[in-house]
Length: 114
Length: 112
Image (cartoon, rainbow over all chains, first blue to last red; front, side, top):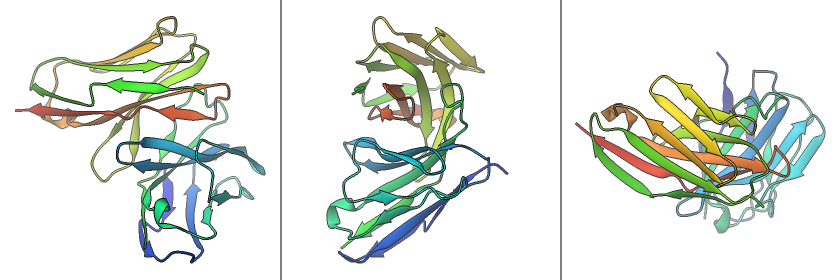
């Protein structure tokens, strides 16, 4: 089954404790992206990657890091999480011809940073 | 930067009525315009994608139009059903097709 898998689905942690949210896709997609969703602000793009070793900032990259060492994985790293990063996070992927093909989304990761 | 707006924020209709959802964007040099559905506690499901060279796309009861000159896209859902209740989001990219801006969404309730 074609899917985008995020782990963990839920996490409660404390300020300053480094965490990684993993994202994996099994569709051989070149493009992957991370978003956060907050009430009243909608979905905002954090980082995206057009291919392996190619990453670019979205609209809200501050406080986040990403890496794309393999095509299927695109982890989101919070080096020193803060309460304002409490949010619902989504990973998405799309084929290289992203202009013509829609994005596939994971089920989301709900992060609470105390 | 592409700005995407959806009005209204919420909509309630009786079953059987046609739904019309609006999306406006600021940059007419748009690569594509996508419509998504989001159910509570779930991720987004792609409904329709309209490329910049297209005027509309159709899938079953869904039809989406794109008017770049006016900066608008409209999603029509014919003969609405209670199962259509969800939040509908539109998203567009300009400048770089990888950089996507979302509208805040329209929450739809279809009452039996």
